[in-house]
Length: 147
Image (cartoon, rainbow, N blue to C red; front, side):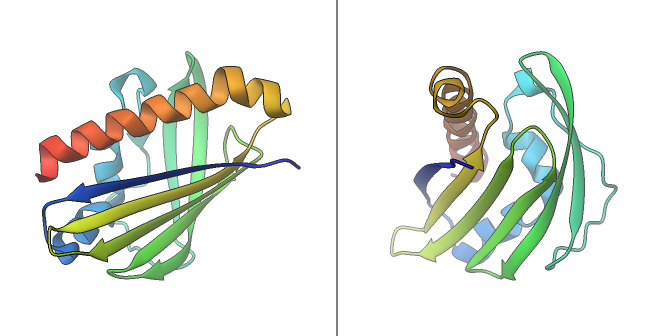
């Protein structure tokens, strides 16, 4: 299976512990996800974050209702964590979140490896533009909420 990678970095002018704490609450994901996705975390609070934790979501992709389940596969507070899709719209989705403390704040890194049905053309014209818009929205919301 061919996979694609999206990598982003963003400086948040807050201490790493505070930034990691925000990201480690799975319910905050709804706050930084674009409203057009109609994203809802289905797993009730509190969600104990650790390797093996399963989290269920509901959203709409291009108007189509989708259920998504992710599993926390790496957990190393406050440095990084990773989640992988167990059920959802992608052939694979592995998202690694990193948090590096700097003099200016915390450098938040995202690396997403994903696979799609239809390969390169579907990714280029449909999937990649959508993922980029989602991460652009997320970046703006994080600036509003945390800076």
